[in-house]
Every structure is written in C-alpha cells, then in structure tokens.
Image (cartoon, rainbow, N blue to C red):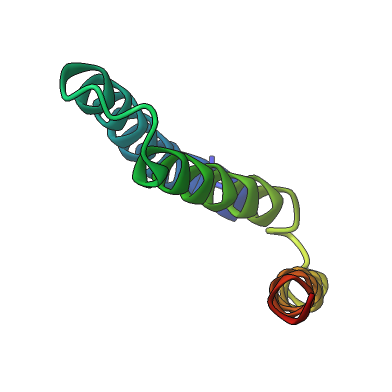
Length: 90
C-alpha cells in the first residue's frame, strides 16, 4: 500500500516535535539549576517554542491543502506583526 503524504509528514513533524520538547525541558532544567526563573530569557525561549509548536500543529492540519495553509500562515504572521507594532507604538 502506498504511503500518504500526510503520514510521511506526520513522521517528519513528530521528530521536530520531539526535538522542541527536549529543548523546552532542557531550558526548564537549566533555569532551575542556574536559578534563572526571574530572568526574561526563560520566558522568551519557552514562548518562542510554544509558537513554533503552534505553527507546526496548524501545518499538520492544512497539509492536504497547501494554498489554504499559505494564506493562513501569512494571516498569522501579519497578525503577530500587527500586535508587535501596536505594542511598540503604545
């Protein structure tokens, strides 16, 4: 039986997810060892990993229709930039 493209991407994305999870756990352990919970780098790294995993989960859902994924991805990027610019202005 022929493999479906989604099944191939699931295997590929699952390795990326594992790497990001290991990275998040190592950041948490390093923050605990060096007592860095009050610094901003721990929060920044964990939030950026959460955003990456968020994008990855949407890419998985829209794998069958790449045009919709491309539009949705640009919509998310524009929304993130708008939020960033609004916080810088105010």
